[in-house]
Image 1 (cartoon, rainbow, N blue to C red):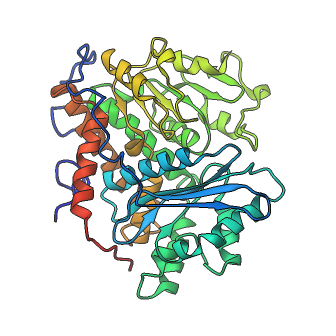
Image 2 (cartoon, rainbow, N blue to C red):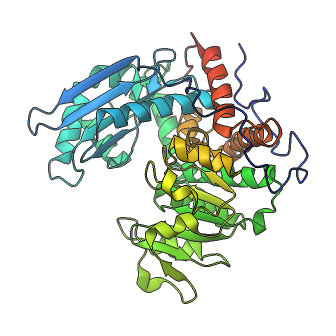
Image 3 (tube, one colour):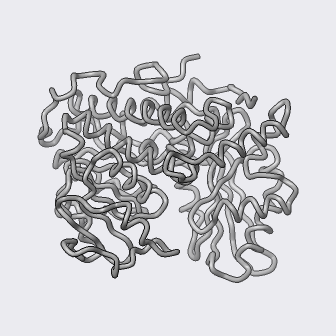
Length: 430
C-alpha cells in the first residue's frame, strides 16, 4: 500500500521540485485548463451515514453527516448558526473527506451542524443535548472539534459533563493506554509557538501562509515582492496574515465585517490583529494614517498577486470575477469560490488552490498529533506542515503550468489515490 501524501510518492517534498524555480512564466497562458470543470468531483457521492436530530426543548434541528469512514473513523467539526441546513452540513462533510484524503490521513470525513443562534442563552444546552443524542458516534467513530459558532472550550466543557473527557475521545479510546494518550494529546494542544500563540489556534493559518508561499515559489515570484490580499481576519485569515508578515510577504489589504484596509506598501499586521475586538473587527480608531478605508467588497479587486478568501463560502461568484486583480487565489475559507467563478478565473489564467488543501493544516496537524507523529515542539509541526503543503502546491501548479490541468483536478487525483490506498486501514494511536 502506498499513500501519496505528497504526489511524488514521498512524505516530504522540496518546494523547488518539478521545473526549476524561476523557469515558469509569470504570465500564464490564456485558457490554460485542459479538462473541463463540468467533470464530476470524485468525492461528490451520497454520504455513508446521515443522522437528523430535533431538540426536544427548543425544536432546533441538527445533523451529523458522515461522508466517509476509514477504519471505522471519521473526523469533522461541529458548527452552530441560525439558518444552518442539512445541505450545508453535507457539503462540508464531503469537503472534510477530501481534506483527510488529500493529506493521506487514516480517517474519513464528517461534519455536524445545528440550526441555532450561538448567542442564544440556551445554545450550550442545545449543544449538550445534541451531543448526548450522538453519543454512540462520539464514543466509537466520530472525532469533532470547534467550528463556526462553537469554541473548543465549549466542546470540552460539554464532553466533560457527558463523561467523555475530550472531543478526540473516539480516537483516544483506541490507544492501548488511553490515559497516557490523553495526557500526550493535551500537552500537544497546549503547545505555544515562539510568539506565545497556542499552536492549535494558529496552525491552520500557518498552513494557508505556506500555501501562499508555495504558490509564489512555484510561479517564480520573489516572496518579499509578492503582495497578498486577505478577505476575513478570523482564526484562519488572521493566522495567515501573521505568518505571511513574519515571512516578509507584504499583506496589502485585509477585510473584516466593517470594510477593507489597504496600503500598497504593506499593512502593520501585528498592530491591526492586536486591535481586533471579540467579533474580529479592527478598531478603526487605531488604523494609522496612510491606510485607505474602503468598502468591504473592495478586497476582491485590491491590486495584489494573491487573493486569500478566508471569510465565508461562495464569496467569489461569477459577478466578481472580472474585478479580481490577483494572479492567483488561495482558498482559506470552505468553498469560497463557486464552480462557475473558478472556471472563469481559469480562463483568465488565474489558478485557484483549493480549500481542501490550503486550509487543511489544522485537521492534518490534529491527526499527526493523535498518531504521535508530532509532539510538543512547535517547530516539528511547522516543518511537517510546511513540507507537505508546499509539496502539494508545487505539484498542482506544475500540472497547471505544464499540462494545463486545474489545481483542483490535480488535487482530486492524489486525494482519490490516497483514499483508495487507505481502504481497510486501521488507525494506530500510540
